Length: 460
Image (cartoon, rainbow, N blue to C red; front, side, top):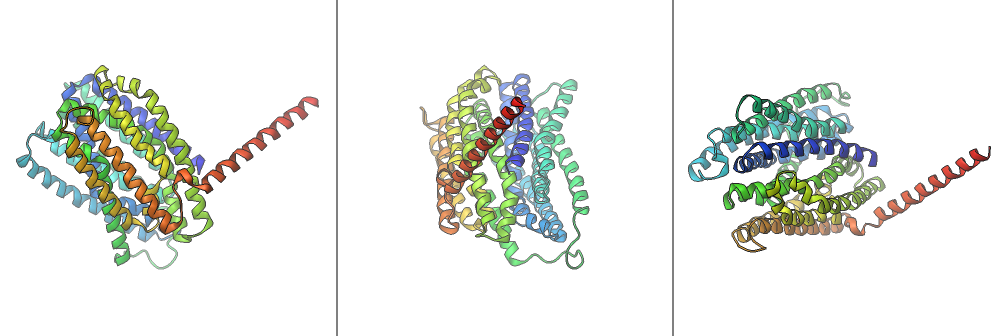
């Protein structure tokens, strides 16, 4: 598991470096206002993609990974096609809402330019496809392609197109967003073609012809609750981004979103573990929920979260100031915001991948209830604190709200997991510490053996 996690982490880091370079370049060539608008649109596209496809994206792991491992290719293909149709329908609804919003809230940053809403629709549709297809690759046990396409291609292609536009036109928010939208759509098309070929080359279905059966009621309920989980999680973790464009000006929104992007660098570590552990959780839980293999997989994930995410939080807190300075001297004003956001992300090191574990182990309904509560807390906190003056208002208030909601939802989720599955949070997981001790002892023995062999060779 560690080797696959490090592979995913390396690819995610490479993608993050390209993304940060893209962000630094945009911060230099755009005005502060255009930069704020551009980042706001990109953030809204990411959130919108999660809204329209979160249920099927999670179902691709929860239901798709066991289907692939058991040779049920028809079930996997059916799940993927229905997910794409759901994403298309959700994007159409979003386009309608944007048209209505133009009449009700014309001062929102989305409507800073006439073409921005339509570029946003394209970005949402393409990003939703990318999320769904990436989980399709994970379900088919192709970790490298999943991470490569979502990290390097998803950022590198839009960067190249935007840079090309900058050669021919004066780059502003509309041009930057157009380049990103076209690039994202191109990546989605490439991923769809490649995944279709992979599924076609997959193992044969074990029983019967590859027909498309009707969706079972239990599967429909599972996808429905997974959708609620995704929507509530987006609301809980991104209430600041959803509301900050209306509560703060473009410059402050740009500062805050830049700090949030930097804090999201820690997600490179957490996502690397999730990408590796998610399909494994789904397959092992479907095989034996109380089995030793499943409990060991959870202990390994908890250990990796505790060590890697905790270390990443401490490192980013130290280097956060110079990283923000790369955006420009004015962005260092967001360093206190960055520290608050890092403190919130540290909750994942303490409790482990509780959200992933619940959605992969038939606890999605409880996870939905907890996350809905976190979303309500996030929205209420942002609306209450952001308008205030002083150290607990403005950008700081939004960051405090998100950090608090993170601890509340992770703590409650951990309690439910312990009650239902008997699995403790990462910080007190005895199995995880035993794995660490065993790895340390084995490493020490290996080192001593190498030293003994080198001495014997020297004598000879």
